[in-house]
Length: 374
Image (cartoon, rainbow, N blue to C red):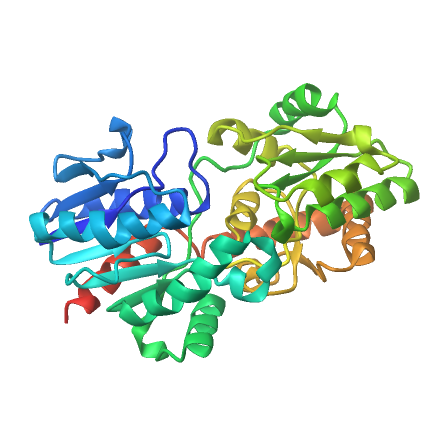
Protein backbone atom coordinates (compact mmCIF):
# COMPACT_ATOMS: atom_id res chain seq x y z
CA UNK A 1 0.00 0.00 0.00
CA UNK A 2 1.10 3.56 -0.73
CA UNK A 3 0.30 6.09 2.00
CA UNK A 4 0.83 9.81 1.35
CA UNK A 5 1.23 11.92 4.50
CA UNK A 6 1.00 15.67 5.06
CA UNK A 7 4.24 16.32 7.00
CA UNK A 8 4.46 20.09 6.75
CA UNK A 9 4.60 20.43 10.56
CA UNK A 10 7.76 18.31 10.83
CA UNK A 11 10.07 21.28 11.42
CA UNK A 12 13.56 20.78 12.82
CA UNK A 13 13.86 22.06 16.43
CA UNK A 14 10.34 23.55 16.19
CA UNK A 15 8.05 20.63 16.95
CA UNK A 16 4.95 21.63 18.91
CA UNK A 17 1.51 20.02 19.33
CA UNK A 18 0.61 18.96 15.79
CA UNK A 19 4.26 18.46 14.90
CA UNK A 20 4.76 16.07 17.81
CA UNK A 21 1.56 14.18 16.97
CA UNK A 22 2.79 13.75 13.39
CA UNK A 23 6.30 12.79 14.43
CA UNK A 24 5.38 10.27 17.12
CA UNK A 25 2.48 8.55 15.37
CA UNK A 26 3.78 8.48 11.81
CA UNK A 27 7.30 7.40 12.82
CA UNK A 28 5.88 4.41 14.64
CA UNK A 29 3.58 3.58 11.73
CA UNK A 30 6.45 3.70 9.25
CA UNK A 31 8.65 1.43 11.38
CA UNK A 32 5.82 -1.00 12.15
CA UNK A 33 4.81 -1.39 8.49
CA UNK A 34 7.89 -1.79 6.26
CA UNK A 35 5.60 -3.49 3.73
CA UNK A 36 4.02 -0.11 2.91
CA UNK A 37 5.51 2.84 1.01
CA UNK A 38 5.09 6.21 2.71
CA UNK A 39 5.27 9.45 0.72
CA UNK A 40 5.93 12.47 2.93
CA UNK A 41 4.69 15.81 1.58
CA UNK A 42 6.70 18.75 2.95
CA UNK A 43 6.11 22.41 2.16
CA UNK A 44 9.81 23.39 2.52
CA UNK A 45 13.24 21.83 2.78
CA UNK A 46 13.17 19.04 5.36
CA UNK A 47 15.60 17.55 7.86
CA UNK A 48 16.85 14.02 7.21
CA UNK A 49 15.91 13.09 10.78
CA UNK A 50 12.29 12.97 9.59
CA UNK A 51 12.99 10.32 6.95
CA UNK A 52 12.42 7.52 9.41
CA UNK A 53 13.20 4.48 7.24
CA UNK A 54 13.91 3.27 3.72
CA UNK A 55 10.18 2.98 2.96
CA UNK A 56 9.79 6.79 3.16
CA UNK A 57 9.89 8.87 -0.03
CA UNK A 58 10.05 12.65 0.61
CA UNK A 59 8.53 15.32 -1.65
CA UNK A 60 8.79 19.11 -1.30
CA UNK A 61 5.71 20.90 -2.65
CA UNK A 62 5.63 24.62 -3.42
CA UNK A 63 4.60 27.05 -1.94
CA UNK A 64 5.43 27.00 1.79
CA UNK A 65 1.99 27.02 3.41
CA UNK A 66 1.86 29.31 6.44
CA UNK A 67 -0.92 31.73 5.47
CA UNK A 68 -4.59 31.24 4.45
CA UNK A 69 -3.96 32.06 0.77
CA UNK A 70 -0.96 29.74 0.69
CA UNK A 71 -2.87 27.03 2.56
CA UNK A 72 -5.41 27.10 -0.25
CA UNK A 73 -2.72 27.00 -2.95
CA UNK A 74 -0.89 24.13 -1.27
CA UNK A 75 -3.89 21.91 -0.53
CA UNK A 76 -5.94 22.64 -3.65
CA UNK A 77 -3.16 22.73 -6.26
CA UNK A 78 0.17 21.38 -5.01
CA UNK A 79 -1.21 18.40 -3.08
CA UNK A 80 -3.65 17.14 -5.76
CA UNK A 81 -0.91 17.44 -8.38
CA UNK A 82 1.48 15.41 -6.22
CA UNK A 83 -1.17 12.79 -5.45
CA UNK A 84 -1.91 12.30 -9.15
CA UNK A 85 1.78 11.53 -9.72
CA UNK A 86 2.28 9.36 -6.63
CA UNK A 87 -1.04 7.49 -6.99
CA UNK A 88 -1.31 6.60 -3.27
CA UNK A 89 -4.08 4.46 -1.85
CA UNK A 90 -4.80 7.07 0.84
CA UNK A 91 -3.75 10.57 1.94
CA UNK A 92 -3.28 11.13 5.68
CA UNK A 93 -3.43 14.76 6.80
CA UNK A 94 -2.51 15.26 10.46
CA UNK A 95 -3.07 19.01 10.80
CA UNK A 96 -6.82 19.45 10.37
CA UNK A 97 -6.69 20.41 6.67
CA UNK A 98 -7.12 18.32 3.54
CA UNK A 99 -7.68 18.75 -0.17
CA UNK A 100 -11.17 19.27 -1.51
CA UNK A 101 -9.86 18.76 -5.06
CA UNK A 102 -8.03 15.48 -4.63
CA UNK A 103 -9.72 12.25 -5.71
CA UNK A 104 -7.64 10.09 -3.34
CA UNK A 105 -9.33 8.72 -0.18
CA UNK A 106 -8.37 10.96 2.74
CA UNK A 107 -8.01 10.56 6.50
CA UNK A 108 -8.22 13.80 8.44
CA UNK A 109 -6.86 14.31 11.96
CA UNK A 110 -8.74 17.02 13.86
CA UNK A 111 -7.14 18.18 17.10
CA UNK A 112 -9.79 20.66 18.20
CA UNK A 113 -12.43 23.13 17.05
CA UNK A 114 -11.20 25.92 19.31
CA UNK A 115 -12.03 28.59 16.72
CA UNK A 116 -15.71 27.62 16.96
CA UNK A 117 -15.66 28.32 20.70
CA UNK A 118 -13.35 31.36 20.82
CA UNK A 119 -13.74 33.44 17.66
CA UNK A 120 -11.55 36.24 19.00
CA UNK A 121 -8.49 34.05 19.50
CA UNK A 122 -7.41 34.01 15.85
CA UNK A 123 -7.06 36.82 13.33
CA UNK A 124 -9.96 37.74 11.05
CA UNK A 125 -8.65 36.13 7.86
CA UNK A 126 -7.70 32.87 9.57
CA UNK A 127 -11.09 32.70 11.26
CA UNK A 128 -12.84 33.17 7.89
CA UNK A 129 -10.74 30.37 6.41
CA UNK A 130 -11.48 27.99 9.31
CA UNK A 131 -15.20 28.77 9.38
CA UNK A 132 -15.57 28.18 5.65
CA UNK A 133 -13.23 25.25 5.04
CA UNK A 134 -13.06 23.10 8.19
CA UNK A 135 -16.70 21.92 7.96
CA UNK A 136 -16.05 21.08 4.29
CA UNK A 137 -12.86 19.21 5.21
CA UNK A 138 -14.72 17.19 7.85
CA UNK A 139 -17.48 16.23 5.42
CA UNK A 140 -15.06 15.46 2.56
CA UNK A 141 -12.85 13.16 4.65
CA UNK A 142 -13.40 9.45 4.23
CA UNK A 143 -12.63 9.08 7.92
CA UNK A 144 -11.73 11.43 10.76
CA UNK A 145 -9.35 10.80 13.65
CA UNK A 146 -10.13 12.94 16.71
CA UNK A 147 -7.58 13.26 19.52
CA UNK A 148 -10.18 13.00 22.30
CA UNK A 149 -13.73 11.84 22.87
CA UNK A 150 -14.60 15.47 23.59
CA UNK A 151 -13.33 16.52 20.15
CA UNK A 152 -15.20 13.64 18.50
CA UNK A 153 -18.47 14.78 20.08
CA UNK A 154 -17.75 18.40 19.16
CA UNK A 155 -17.17 17.52 15.48
CA UNK A 156 -20.23 15.29 15.23
CA UNK A 157 -22.53 17.86 16.86
CA UNK A 158 -21.29 21.01 15.12
CA UNK A 159 -20.99 19.60 11.62
CA UNK A 160 -23.78 17.02 11.73
CA UNK A 161 -21.38 14.17 11.01
CA UNK A 162 -22.08 10.59 12.04
CA UNK A 163 -19.99 9.56 15.07
CA UNK A 164 -19.41 6.26 13.24
CA UNK A 165 -17.14 8.13 10.82
CA UNK A 166 -14.90 9.40 13.64
CA UNK A 167 -12.24 7.37 15.49
CA UNK A 168 -10.70 8.56 18.77
CA UNK A 169 -6.91 8.48 18.56
CA UNK A 170 -5.67 9.97 21.82
CA UNK A 171 -2.30 11.67 22.00
CA UNK A 172 0.54 10.06 23.90
CA UNK A 173 3.50 11.32 25.89
CA UNK A 174 7.15 11.06 24.94
CA UNK A 175 9.49 8.72 26.83
CA UNK A 176 11.73 11.75 27.44
CA UNK A 177 9.48 12.68 30.36
CA UNK A 178 10.27 10.71 33.53
CA UNK A 179 10.86 11.42 37.24
CA UNK A 180 14.24 12.68 38.45
CA UNK A 181 15.98 11.81 41.69
CA UNK A 182 15.88 14.49 44.37
CA UNK A 183 19.56 15.36 43.88
CA UNK A 184 18.96 15.97 40.17
CA UNK A 185 15.85 18.04 40.92
CA UNK A 186 17.85 20.18 43.32
CA UNK A 187 20.49 20.73 40.65
CA UNK A 188 17.85 21.85 38.13
CA UNK A 189 16.16 24.15 40.67
CA UNK A 190 19.46 25.78 41.55
CA UNK A 191 20.01 26.53 37.88
CA UNK A 192 16.47 27.67 37.05
CA UNK A 193 15.13 29.34 40.20
CA UNK A 194 18.08 29.73 42.55
CA UNK A 195 16.90 26.66 44.47
CA UNK A 196 13.34 27.88 45.06
CA UNK A 197 10.34 25.62 44.37
CA UNK A 198 8.36 26.54 41.28
CA UNK A 199 5.18 25.89 39.37
CA UNK A 200 5.58 25.36 35.64
CA UNK A 201 3.42 26.29 32.69
CA UNK A 202 4.49 24.49 29.49
CA UNK A 203 3.04 25.76 26.23
CA UNK A 204 2.82 28.72 23.91
CA UNK A 205 1.50 32.06 25.14
CA UNK A 206 -1.72 33.14 23.42
CA UNK A 207 -5.22 34.02 24.66
CA UNK A 208 -6.69 30.51 24.71
CA UNK A 209 -3.94 29.35 27.07
CA UNK A 210 -5.23 31.74 29.77
CA UNK A 211 -1.75 32.74 30.92
CA UNK A 212 -2.96 36.16 32.09
CA UNK A 213 -5.22 34.61 34.74
CA UNK A 214 -2.40 32.27 35.72
CA UNK A 215 -0.23 35.33 36.37
CA UNK A 216 -2.99 36.87 38.49
CA UNK A 217 -3.44 33.67 40.47
CA UNK A 218 0.28 33.31 41.09
CA UNK A 219 0.52 36.93 42.23
CA UNK A 220 -2.31 36.37 44.71
CA UNK A 221 -0.76 33.07 45.80
CA UNK A 222 2.53 34.81 46.62
CA UNK A 223 0.70 37.55 48.50
CA UNK A 224 -1.16 34.97 50.62
CA UNK A 225 1.69 32.61 51.49
CA UNK A 226 5.09 33.05 53.07
CA UNK A 227 7.12 31.36 50.37
CA UNK A 228 9.75 32.01 47.70
CA UNK A 229 7.86 30.03 45.02
CA UNK A 230 8.49 30.98 41.40
CA UNK A 231 6.42 30.49 38.24
CA UNK A 232 8.30 29.12 35.24
CA UNK A 233 6.84 29.76 31.77
CA UNK A 234 8.31 27.39 29.18
CA UNK A 235 7.01 28.28 25.74
CA UNK A 236 7.20 30.80 22.95
CA UNK A 237 5.10 33.93 22.59
CA UNK A 238 2.70 32.87 19.84
CA UNK A 239 0.16 35.59 19.02
CA UNK A 240 -1.95 38.28 20.68
CA UNK A 241 0.20 38.23 23.81
CA UNK A 242 -0.35 41.89 24.80
CA UNK A 243 -3.02 41.21 27.43
CA UNK A 244 -1.02 38.48 29.17
CA UNK A 245 2.17 40.53 29.16
CA UNK A 246 0.37 43.64 30.40
CA UNK A 247 -1.02 41.55 33.25
CA UNK A 248 2.54 40.42 33.97
CA UNK A 249 3.80 44.00 34.03
CA UNK A 250 1.22 44.87 36.73
CA UNK A 251 2.17 41.96 39.00
CA UNK A 252 3.62 42.64 42.41
CA UNK A 253 5.74 39.50 42.09
CA UNK A 254 6.50 39.81 38.38
CA UNK A 255 10.22 39.27 39.03
CA UNK A 256 9.38 35.78 40.27
CA UNK A 257 7.99 34.76 36.87
CA UNK A 258 10.78 33.12 34.87
CA UNK A 259 10.37 33.11 31.07
CA UNK A 260 12.41 30.38 29.39
CA UNK A 261 10.95 30.48 25.87
CA UNK A 262 10.65 27.39 23.69
CA UNK A 263 12.98 24.66 24.98
CA UNK A 264 14.46 21.48 23.51
CA UNK A 265 12.51 18.49 24.75
CA UNK A 266 15.32 17.03 26.86
CA UNK A 267 15.83 20.31 28.71
CA UNK A 268 12.09 20.86 29.20
CA UNK A 269 11.65 17.34 30.58
CA UNK A 270 14.23 17.95 33.33
CA UNK A 271 12.69 21.29 34.25
CA UNK A 272 9.22 19.72 34.28
CA UNK A 273 10.32 16.87 36.56
CA UNK A 274 11.79 19.35 39.06
CA UNK A 275 8.64 21.46 39.42
CA UNK A 276 6.24 21.44 42.36
CA UNK A 277 3.34 21.07 39.93
CA UNK A 278 2.18 21.79 36.41
CA UNK A 279 -0.26 24.70 36.16
CA UNK A 280 -2.07 24.17 32.84
CA UNK A 281 -5.30 26.14 33.10
CA UNK A 282 -6.18 26.64 29.45
CA UNK A 283 -9.63 27.85 28.43
CA UNK A 284 -9.97 25.09 25.84
CA UNK A 285 -7.97 22.09 24.61
CA UNK A 286 -8.58 19.33 22.12
CA UNK A 287 -6.34 17.16 24.32
CA UNK A 288 -3.61 18.75 26.47
CA UNK A 289 -0.36 16.81 26.06
CA UNK A 290 1.50 18.69 28.87
CA UNK A 291 -0.89 17.03 31.35
CA UNK A 292 0.51 13.61 30.40
CA UNK A 293 4.08 14.92 30.28
CA UNK A 294 3.73 16.17 33.85
CA UNK A 295 2.24 12.88 35.05
CA UNK A 296 5.08 10.95 33.42
CA UNK A 297 7.53 13.37 35.05
CA UNK A 298 6.20 12.45 38.49
CA UNK A 299 4.69 15.82 39.45
CA UNK A 300 1.13 16.84 40.41
CA UNK A 301 -1.13 18.58 37.90
CA UNK A 302 -3.44 21.58 38.18
CA UNK A 303 -5.61 21.83 35.09
CA UNK A 304 -8.98 23.05 33.84
CA UNK A 305 -12.36 21.42 34.35
CA UNK A 306 -13.48 22.17 30.79
CA UNK A 307 -13.29 20.63 27.28
CA UNK A 308 -10.97 17.60 27.01
CA UNK A 309 -8.80 18.22 30.05
CA UNK A 310 -10.88 16.21 32.57
CA UNK A 311 -10.84 13.32 30.06
CA UNK A 312 -7.04 13.33 30.03
CA UNK A 313 -6.55 14.07 33.74
CA UNK A 314 -9.11 11.63 35.14
CA UNK A 315 -9.03 11.74 38.95
CA UNK A 316 -5.30 12.43 38.97
CA UNK A 317 -5.33 16.25 38.97
CA UNK A 318 -6.79 19.26 40.73
CA UNK A 319 -9.46 20.56 38.33
CA UNK A 320 -10.30 24.26 38.39
CA UNK A 321 -12.55 26.69 36.60
CA UNK A 322 -10.03 28.39 34.27
CA UNK A 323 -11.97 31.66 34.46
CA UNK A 324 -11.64 31.78 38.27
CA UNK A 325 -8.40 33.31 39.54
CA UNK A 326 -9.42 32.25 43.06
CA UNK A 327 -9.80 28.58 42.10
CA UNK A 328 -6.42 28.53 40.37
CA UNK A 329 -4.78 30.18 43.39
CA UNK A 330 -6.47 27.80 45.84
CA UNK A 331 -5.13 24.82 43.89
CA UNK A 332 -1.63 26.31 44.10
CA UNK A 333 -2.06 26.77 47.86
CA UNK A 334 -3.11 23.12 48.24
CA UNK A 335 -0.02 21.91 46.42
CA UNK A 336 2.30 24.23 48.36
CA UNK A 337 0.91 23.35 51.79
CA UNK A 338 -0.14 19.70 51.53
CA UNK A 339 2.72 17.35 50.71
CA UNK A 340 0.55 14.23 51.10
CA UNK A 341 -1.89 15.56 48.47
CA UNK A 342 0.99 16.06 46.05
CA UNK A 343 2.16 12.48 46.60
CA UNK A 344 -1.39 11.17 46.13
CA UNK A 345 -1.85 13.07 42.85
CA UNK A 346 1.56 11.91 41.61
CA UNK A 347 0.70 8.26 42.28
CA UNK A 348 -2.68 8.61 40.55
CA UNK A 349 -1.00 10.42 37.66
CA UNK A 350 1.40 7.55 37.17
CA UNK A 351 -1.56 5.19 36.70
CA UNK A 352 -3.59 7.60 34.58
CA UNK A 353 -0.74 8.28 32.11
CA UNK A 354 -0.46 4.56 31.34
CA UNK A 355 -3.83 4.78 29.57
CA UNK A 356 -2.17 6.85 26.83
CA UNK A 357 0.84 6.12 24.65
CA UNK A 358 2.10 7.02 21.18
CA UNK A 359 2.12 3.29 20.37
CA UNK A 360 -1.64 3.24 21.00
CA UNK A 361 -2.01 6.40 18.90
CA UNK A 362 -0.08 4.99 15.95
CA UNK A 363 -2.03 1.74 15.97
CA UNK A 364 -5.42 3.45 16.17
CA UNK A 365 -4.43 5.86 13.39
CA UNK A 366 -3.38 2.94 11.21
CA UNK A 367 -6.70 1.21 11.87
CA UNK A 368 -8.45 4.46 10.91
CA UNK A 369 -6.55 4.44 7.61
CA UNK A 370 -7.62 0.86 6.90
CA UNK A 371 -11.27 1.75 7.64
CA UNK A 372 -11.08 4.61 5.14
CA UNK A 373 -10.38 2.10 2.38
CA UNK A 374 -13.16 -0.33 3.21
